[in-house]
Length: 259
Image (cartoon, rainbow, N blue to C red; front, side, top):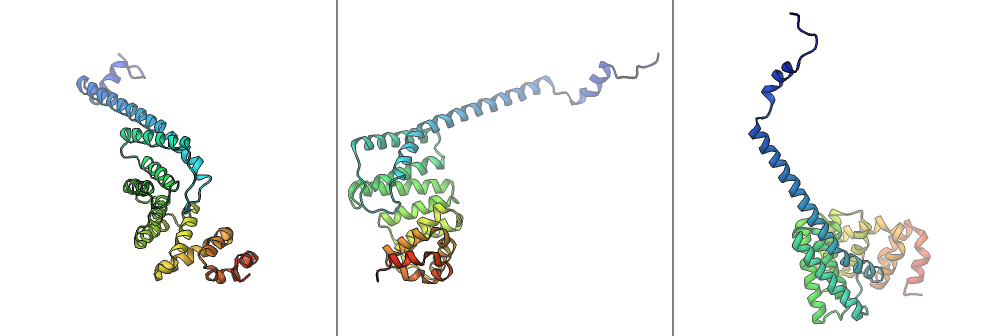
């Protein structure tokens, strides 16, 4: 009897039989798949709840960061309503951390909340000192989880400077920020402010790094740089840049104390 030109079902079963999963093993793989799917669902649910608990902190910070200067030393007026929102935001982050204990973003938010809260009290008051301590601890924990986060290194440097920590530690964090995010505006402008604030303490490599930073940013950020230099009586340090960027010469003259 002549065989058909196409394979029969029996032929297909015979060919596939060596690769077919035994019933017991097939059941085990199904169990593994279900466990993975359940684990992903639980993780997604925890992540979503943590994000929901973090929202009040983001909302408070969005309002505060629009009106506050990063290196301001004057207390910002606070009201009972803002204090209540701040406490609710901190409590929300505590719940988020219980769900995701190793989330660097949550620790960053907590650090920023305490950082800005400290600016709302007298710099050396017990409340401000407590906030600085909590901000620094939160930033450090976030950086343990994400050590190349340049923008957070510069926030840590600011908190150390504002809380009166040793300049050497401030500049160590400053250098790490510029190493990990040298082109980020969120790092460059605070780094310039810190560099001017500690200008007399900069060593040779730090001064070279500061000069390079000013060279990179002066064309676009001349107004901010000139104001900060005037604040710390360092306008003369910018004279070499004026020859290259003469568009800022008039503003330099306006801010010069000789006027």
